[in-house]
Image (cartoon, rainbow, N blue to C red; front, side, top):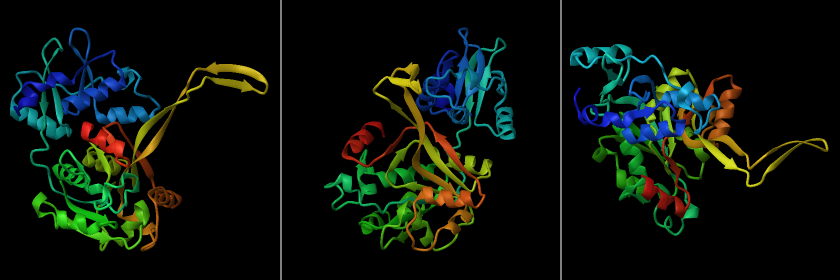
Amino acid sequence: MSNKKNSFDWRSAVLPFNSNIQSAIHSLEASCLQIVLVVDSSHKLLGTLTDGDIRRAFLRGLNLNSSIESVIHRSPLVVPPEISRELVLHLMQANKIHQLPVVNKEGVVVGLHVWDSVVAPNALENWMVIMAGGRGMRLHPRTEHCPKPMLEVGGKPMLQHIIERARIEGFRQFVISLHYLGEVIENYFGEGNQWGVHIQYIREKTPLGTAGCLSLLKHTPSQPIVVTNGDVLTDVHYKDMLDFHVLHQATATMAVRQYEMQNQFGVVKTKGLDIDGFEEKPIYRSHINAGIYVLNPEALSHLPVNQPCDMPTLFERVKNNDKRTIVYPMHEPWLDVGRPDDLVLAEKNF
């Protein structure tokens, strides 16, 4: 169980009790350990915090400035320093956890056991479908001879970033939807052998929207599929989103991000002619579509073959047939690369 994270990096996951959710997110991203260890001034463990806790907090209406006090898990499983590796392994397997805090007799955090599932992920049967047919008009002239998903970020195409990240999490079966300059993508990736994956292609003769291309799949999948736009760069864990979808018994799941928009003016609240109150430059919060989805095979039955359809329309059809549609709240870094400024930002952040 020993590795650099266990020996050195676990301290980057420690966070004071009086922190807010934004600080917890920064801690999760900085440590890459997928857990926050919440401590008091004496460094005693008060609880833990994970991605799932933050997502539930957003669904309850909390925001980035909210305290973590009502979010943390106050009775986490912990172990003493002297516990054997074999018992640690058994406890993590039995409780289906990837992190196990180590505390001494005084309750002070002294370490963290981490299950490194990335070393040898189990190969998943689930397909990942990547929609890569868009023209990228706002990125002209860069996209005049290069499809938008093939624009380079950090020395390699955006599409390659998506495939490599998904492969790390166990995805091996990919389907790429092509339209504009599709031959550039197909010539670059081929059947995916260089990346240790298998890639198939579907070709849109005319643009079919963000969901219509799925009607062209040659075979109906046997498991839920992950679908992503080919111009979305993110640190989200696709496997975690898939697990979330299955856990909540959904037919269709949409990744969403919290979006904040501040009114630049002071708002006057009225009742008829009377002033009822004032609100100085209020912030309005909403969820926006992040362009990543999980769909059960039955969801695809709502797509007429070769007919245009966008994802929101598909979700409405699924919901109108009394099937569950849910959101997956994201907090991870995310960027929809649609403009030249987005490419600059992508180079900086990814």
